[in-house]
Image 1 (cartoon, rainbow, N blue to C red):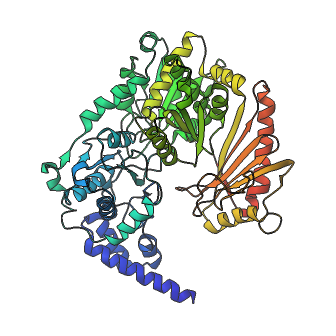
Image 2 (tube, rainbow, N blue to C red):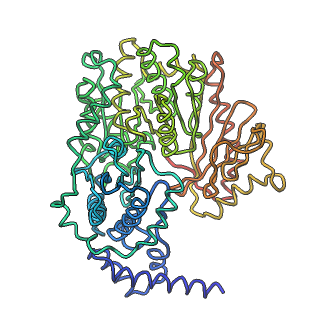
Image 3 (cartoon, rainbow, N blue to C red):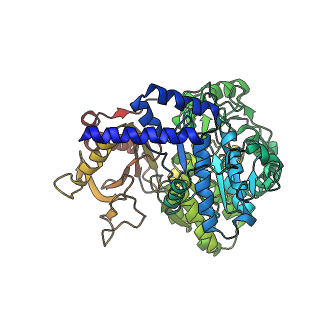
Amino acid sequence: MAEAGSSGETRRAQAAAAQWLEWDKNPKTSHMVKQLVAKGNAEELQKYFGSRMEFGTAGLRAAMGAGISQMNDLTIIQTTQGFCRYLERSFNDLKKRGVVIGYDARAHPSSGGSSKRFARLAATTFISQGVPVYLFSNITPTPFVPYTVTHLKLSAGIMVTASHNPKQDNGYKVYWENGAQIVSPHDKEIAQAIEDNQEPWPQAWDDSSLDTSPLLHDPYTTINKDYFKDIQTHCFHRNLNKATNLKFVHTSVHGVGHEFVQSAFKAFGFSPPFAVPEQKDPDPEFPTVKYPNPEEGKGVLTLSFALAEKEGAKVILANDPDADRLAVAEKQESGDWKVFSGNELGALLGWWIFSCWKDQNRDPLAIKDVYMLSSTVSSKILRAIALKEGFHFEETLTGFKWMGNRAKQLMDQGKKILFAFEEAIGYMCSPVVLDKDGVSAAVITAEMCSFLATKNLSLSQQLKVIYDEYGYHVTKASYFICHDPKTIKQLFENLRNYNGKDTYPKTCGRFKVSGVRDLTTGHDSNQPDKKAVLPTSKSSQMITFTFANGGVATMRTSGTEPKIKYYAELCAPPGNSDPEKLKKELEELVSAIEEYFFQPEKNKLQSKTE
C-alpha cells in the first residue's frame, strides 16, 4: 500500500514540475527543474514539488531556490496574486489606497532570487491589476513597512525579508491595514486565494514596465523624513545627548540597519555611533558570523567588542539584518562584557519609558489609560512594575503580531500604549510602529544610557535598582533541536497523559507543579472553568507550568525552526534580594524540566550549542 502512495506522490510531484516548466520564466530556476526532471530523481522532485510553502501568520519563510516549496520568482508571483485577490475582496477602495512593499539585502545568485527582485515582481503583479504600489527604491528596515501602512493609510504592506535566518532563506511578511502583522483567519484565507490563483497573470512577469507606471510611488524620502520626526517625540534629553561623553558601537550584522541607526542618533542629538566597518554594509553572504542573529549572544558580537575596546566605547548596540530586533552589551567594571537578555533589556526599557512618561504627565488620573504589553513567554517584570505604579499590563500570545493587534485595539479605545516587548530581543518603544523596531529601540536605549551616566549609573546597576524596587525576576530560556515532528508531538502528548490519560504532571523532580495552562488544547487549571483566557491553536504546541516556588516555565514549538523552546522564570517579591540564591534555584528547576519533561536522551534531542 505504502508503495502506491509514494508512487502517487511521485506522479503528483512530476506533474507539478511539468506545470512549473510551462509557467516559470526565470532561466536559472527553470534550468534547475529541467535537470531534476531529466535525472528523474524522485526524492529530489518530492523535495521541491511535494508540497507548497505554507502561508501562515508570519507569511512565508523558506530557502531560495526552484520549486513550489521554495522562494523564487514564480512562487512570489503566485503568492502576490493570491494576496491581491484577497485584498480586492476585503477592501472596496484598494485601488485608491494601495499597498507598500519593502525589502532587505538578501540575494541568492545561483537561483537568481533576491529580496529586491521579489519586491519588484510583487509590485508588478499588483500594478497589473490597477493597484497603486508604494515600493521603496532602496533597502529599508522591516519596521518602515508597518509605519508606512498606517502613516499613508494604505490597505496592506509586504516586507521581503528572512530577518535573521541563514543566508539561503527569504521571506514574505504581511501587514494588514491596521499596521500590525496579520492574524487568523487572514492567513488561511490568503493561503486559499494563493491556491486558487496559481497561473501567472500575463503582465506579472514584465517588471520592465514597472518604473514608468503612473501607479508606482517611491515613499523612501518621505518616510525617511517622517519616521525620524515621529520618533523624536520620544527624545526627552536632547541636551544631555549632545553633551554626553559616552561612546557607542553599533553593528548592523551585514544587514540594513547602519544608515538608519545613524539617522536616529542624529535625530536625538547624539554624535554618530562607531559602526563596525566589516559589518556595516549589507552583504547577503554574512561573511563574519556563523548565524546573523544577535540573539545568539557573544559570538555575533566579537568584532563589536574589538572596536569598542579600541575606541573606548562602553555600550554596544546590535541589530539583526532587517533591523527589527536589538541586542545590547555593556562593559562591566570587571572589564568583562555583559550581553543583556531580551528580558533584562525589556525591564530597563519598560522602566525608562514609564519614567519619561511620568515626568511629562503630572495629571494623576492619566495613568488609568496607560498600558504595557508583553508576550506570555517573556518576563513578568512589566506586570510587577504595573502593579506598583498603577498602569495596566496585559500579556498576549507569543509574537508581535498579537501585541501589535492588541495595541491597535487599545489605541482605538483611546488608551495610551507606552511599550511592548518579547524576550526574543523585540521592542516596540513607539506606537507609530505596531511591531518590533530595532532602530527606535537603539536610540532610546542610547538616551537611557546617556541619562544614567549623569547619575553615575550603568545599565547593569540600574537593572539591579529595578529588581530591588519591583522584585527580582531571573529568567533562563533555551531550546532543543528536533527534526522529527512525530517525536515533538509525542513529547507533548506524554505531558498531557503523564500519570494516565488526561493528567498533567503534579511534580517535576523536587518541584511541585501548582498550575498548568495548555494553549494547544485550551485547558487552564487556574481558571474557575478550567478554560484558558488566551486564544488557543491546535497547530502549535505550548504548555505553561506554574510551580509552588514562584517559578513559571513554558515549553513550545517554534513556527519557523525545528526547535522545542523553553522559557523559565522565578519571580521574587521586592525585598527578597538574594539573586544568587534565586539563580541557583532556577538552574535546578531548569535541569529538572530538561530531565523529566524533555527527556533528551530518550527523545534523541540535540542541545543548543553556543
